[in-house]
Length: 74
Image (tube, rainbow, N blue to C red; front, side):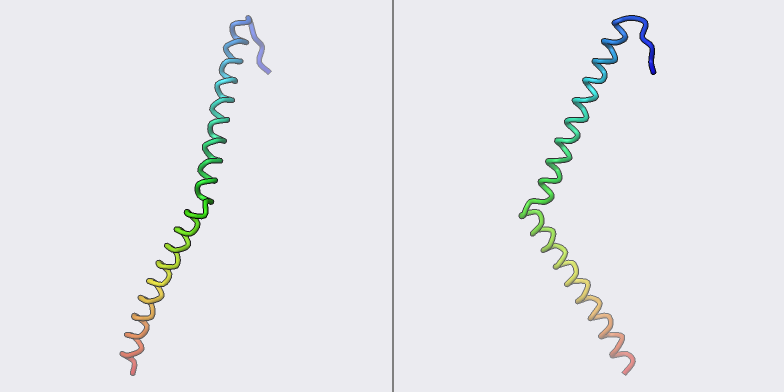
């Protein structure tokens, strides 16, 4: 535990703690807003559509490669 020599030191630490509290509060609000935005229906649909498109392209490419390999073995 810290020992203070005068009231100026106490006031300085109280001010620092108040500022840190404000910073932490802003971090919480920012995190909340980012989470809220990332869970919006528009964002979720966009992400799902991107995943579906990406997976279909991978599947198409894999099918093409496997078909090519299969044709070589015949």
